[in-house]
Image 1 (spheres, helix red, strand yellow):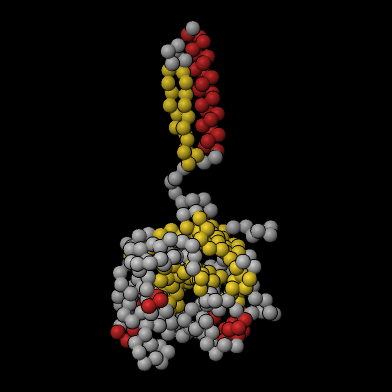
Image 2 (tube, rainbow, N blue to C red):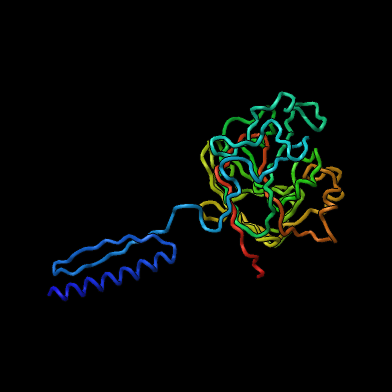
Length: 317
């Protein structure tokens, strides 16, 4: 009986080692529990769970949680690189958009309007451009909007994707030509979805038709207060965009492209001269296959806890 028990025990050990090495090879964590039965034989139970330590494989941390390394501000009325009034800063490990150092005159119109109107829109550009990727962002709105901020910009920010190079923006340009993934917060009453689409200088295709209005709402729920919201955007070059919340698609569209109408408009939708659009459209090609990523400063304080990206292989390969 003793020899039989030893044989059973050795066999159980061998099976356990095979199972353990198999799990480790798949980057899983294994935990073994050994039980001795009434007849003296050993029964080994192996449990497993996915490894959770460290960053997820393949994800690039665009924000390092410490400073603005890799990011460059472009604030309206200021030169590229001038982080006016410390608009973009890192506070307690959070990338923060703040206006507490702005002056009263900053809340006056920059477009010659007689009434007070805050128009010092800004953007923070990441150093690299991308084409096919998944972008994951955690954000929240905090505090109060800056004095005289536009009503539409209350609890409003955006992820500007497939954007123009900031070196090509004029000093007084309002927004980069881009596909904007609009981030909105609830106002305490009514529905106000996030992960919407806005199109400064661009158009997209939805339901097989060219979509030319400036914005369209997603199907997301409303997020109120200062709660953290995690969003994902899957971008496939000039083919498609997919906006996701909690693993569910809330908006999708195809064929991001320049709006050729802005070549002739006296006041293009991006708030800059028509010549910028003329320089971007080469040989009549309107489709946008990639570009910059930037965050906005649109008058409401915002914080970002995580900004990470995973590159994808182009679908045509």
